[in-house]
Amino acid sequence: KCFLFRADPDAKCFHWTPDFSSGFDDIENQVIREQFMVARNEYLAMGANADGTNGLRLDQDLNQGESYPALGFGNEPLAGENMKSFEVGTVEVYRLVRDVDGKAVDGEVDDSVWNLGGM
Image (cartoon, rainbow, N blue to C red; front, side):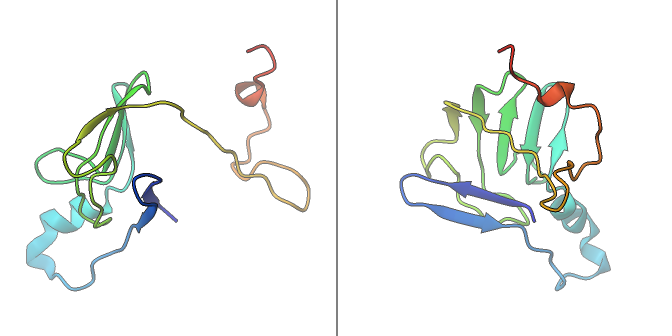
C-alpha cells in the first residue's frame, strides 16, 4: 500500500488508486499516475504531476518539504491549501519485520544501517 496523510488541521489519508477508466490515448497521465514514489540524490517524492510537482517532496536533508495535489492520490496539499512549502519537524522511518522469525521483510542480513546505538 502507498498513501499520503496529514495529521493536522484534520487527520486525513489519501490512498493511491489506479485509474482504469482512461484509454490508451491518455498514456502520459497513466505513466504519471504510476509514479507513486521516486528517490533521487536531491529529493524523495511521492505522487507526481505533469508540471513536475509532487504530492509530497522532501529535500535531500529531509528538513524542507512541499506538497501539491497529485494524480493517483487525489490529495489536498498536506500542509494546507495556502501552504505549499513547509519545514519538516520529524521524519520517522520504519522497517517491517516478520512476526514468525523476526527477520526483516526486505531480506537484508546486514543490520548495520539500522543500528542507531551510537547516535
